[in-house]
Image 1 (cartoon, rainbow, N blue to C red):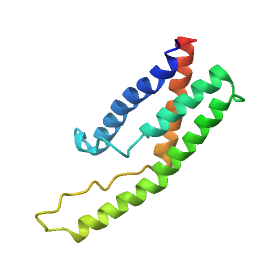
Image 2 (cartoon, rainbow, N blue to C red):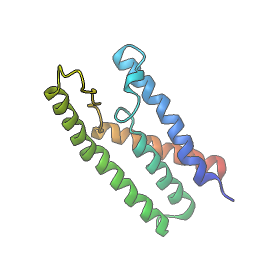
Image 3 (cartoon, one colour):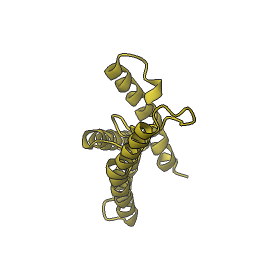
Length: 138
């Protein structure tokens, strides 16, 4: 059984999380535990799907149907990260403003989506990790 296809997203996810935490901490000049989650540089989701697409391209070739599925999934994730989740964040901000001062209101996280730079960083990281896994596992 070839574990590279299972290990790649796990390696990517566990690598990008700490990178994002350290970058967010450096930007805010404090430990950014409250910024862990959706959003930030690099995009974890974009990194995971691009690492798998890269591994499939390197191992199976770009003509393989699995590569087409992986690229399609990449586009869906990127569109979701850039547009849909940013709209959700804007809605959360509006709800927080409206409910300001209401003791029963639970504050909603406003930072949800990714910028194009954050997505590009995730894609580059994922492609790099895909190449690294291919080099290690052959």
